Length: 141
Picture 1 (tube, helix red, strand yellow):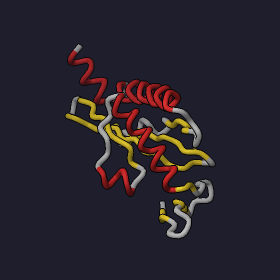
Picture 2 (picture 1 turned 180 degrees about the horizontal axis):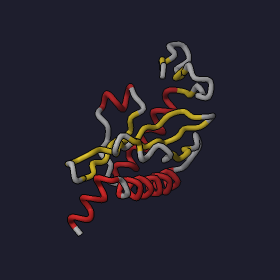
Picture 3 (picture 1 turned 90 degrees about the vertical axis):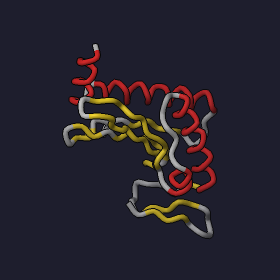
Picture 4 (picture 1 turned 30 degrees about the horizontal axis):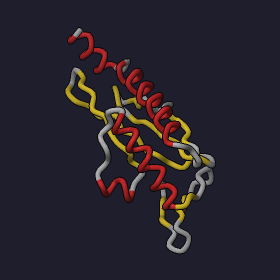
């Protein structure tokens, strides 16, 4: 994916036609609110560089039969809105490939909390069903 910050407009411009330009300041404000809610739900906040220059919003470590593995989350423009996407590899597959929630551009903090809580519950449920995680959970049960 190609991404450049528009110097004169302050917009994030994308080569893909389904991605919309969004004011960089607005994106950063929404991302900051989303990351704050993710941290409240147990996610680890991204490094400062990632907050400023990438879509990465956090990670959550899961203990598995093969050791700790991270789920990651990113906030991207997607068909006229922002969407939160998850990623977690298990047996060569992204078990969170269909985990996505829409984050409206105009939203209040309680709604962020609600959306992020539901997203986190979905991520945990899906990761818990992955092969190495299921093995680990069955061993500690």
